[in-house]
Length: 192
Image (cartoon, rainbow, N blue to C red; front, side):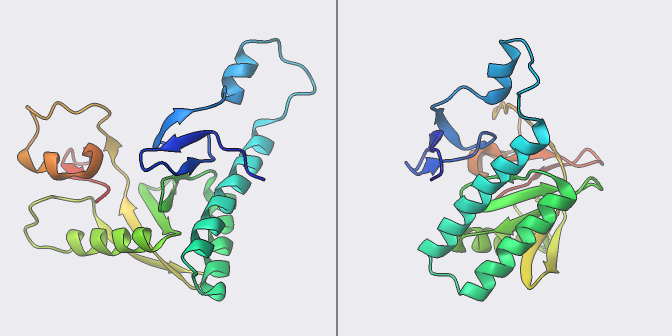
């Protein structure tokens, strides 16, 4: 059984220690625990912790797909893709609807595991193709691998704290102020 370690704003449970959406965390992160004591030979190596955390992420995605009654073949393809990308790129960032992998070449891959995540992927690709959008978005296109469509987006340098008084008006319309700077220095949304 997965260990609940926090809660999201919608009241759903959080199972991953790097969840950016968790409002409350009900445990001491392993890294903090280890930092407070002397290292011993019986401690778990980081790569094993990553494997355990990825298993929790995969379980969360599997539960989400099952609750929405995704077709079994597509759900299996999605889980295979998540595993392949984990092996290739390491741990993803995970939200309520998608897992996001940094590729190391200036792009991120957004893999939906809920219908809301699929809708967000479509909205982002559509918004990126607009000639003169009200909300500029990082360059985005469709990707496809292992039978699964996903979003390939330009990686941006996230703006950690926004001062809405000094930002363009459109920033106020972006969910949770999820904006960042492209390599060219352009302010864009990276999540709609």
